[in-house]
Length: 115
Figure 1 (cartoon, one colour):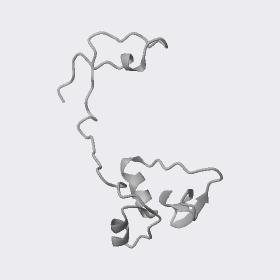
Figure 2: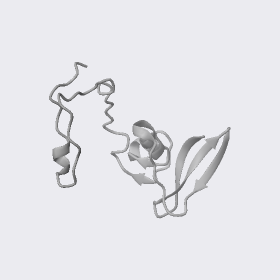
Figure 3: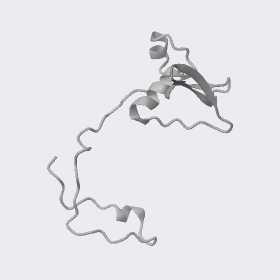
Figure 4: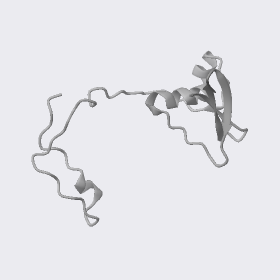
């Protein structure tokens, strides 16, 4: 199954998603809402295929504009160098307690890997 685009009504809210499964295109509708979470590359791709994005870019590809959002698909930054790093602490961190603030639980490592 591959998502093809989102579907929307005139109010601009997503009401479902169009998928391709086994060569057949089907539209699935939602009763309450749609959460689009397809990763760093596919989420903006689906939004743009649905007509949500930079107006000039959408029109250039013959896509009907549903919502003008010029930031969609822009400023993508992949973080390939982070994927293989392992961070080590010299001493184990104590268990987090509810009385400590969230910021105090996340201390930077005392030593880092040589990635």
